[in-house]
Image 1: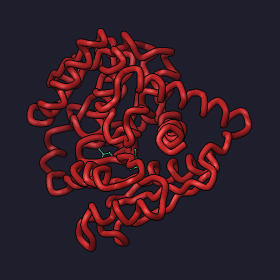
Image 2: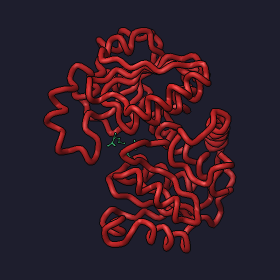
Image 3: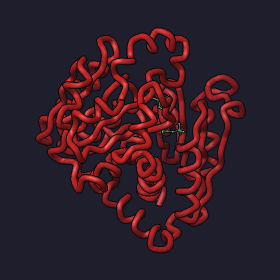
Image 4: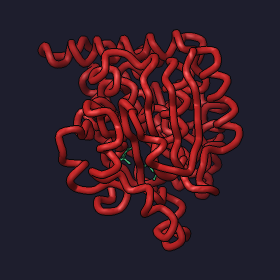
Length: 308
Ligand code: CP
Ligand code: NVA
């Protein structure tokens, strides 16, 4: 991580850098639970640029900055109008004169790349159409807490192989997990993502397997992950996707095929009754709320590393 000024994709990290971030997240969470974090970002400000809605990313980053003694500025989609009212490079240049770091949630991944290219301060990807690395880090932290290690686990992702799947797949293969993606034809991992993750798996002793059968994906798994069938920006495809994805619903019958102690993960927001049932989301194997909390701790590790 030291080698990188920005946090745009987990695929940019070495396994050692990723493990170090996770170790720091564990430590910062422990410290916070024990009474509070040291103010390592005193007087530092993070600009949070949103082009899409958010609950977790907005609030967890704001609280993460507060826990570390700094501040966060929320900039709503209508204000900057990234790339419309003003070019992305100009936004990066100007924000760099005011703040110590930029977190951005964008549509095109190229926008967060351009922000990083033109900013003089660290840029953090708060979700793009390509990947959601802060989510991926929180996902790994949650799995680590429940299972004690990532290496050797079987992690099944079921549904649309989207931005959230990409970060999970990168992170889990970097750390040596066996990753199975159960997704319909046409909604599997992008070829470049699958190829990259396969090289991570080969180096780390894990594996990446894609299949169309959700039952095959979850059989004997240690963790089952799902996300919405239609991501932000894909609303025009919602009706078509609603026809394709019902067999990929994470319900009790599907969960029953995994290990008895398997955990269920979802980045949230959930469309209950679609990709996940109430019974599973609220059931004994659900790790959803710890996972949501872990966004805050995982991001503190990123902020302290980049801005401290
Ligand atoms: N998981 C996640 O990023 O949630 P928000 O869209 O609410 O930030
Ligand atoms: N895949 C979803 C994740 C939301 C946090 C989306 O991009 O809308």
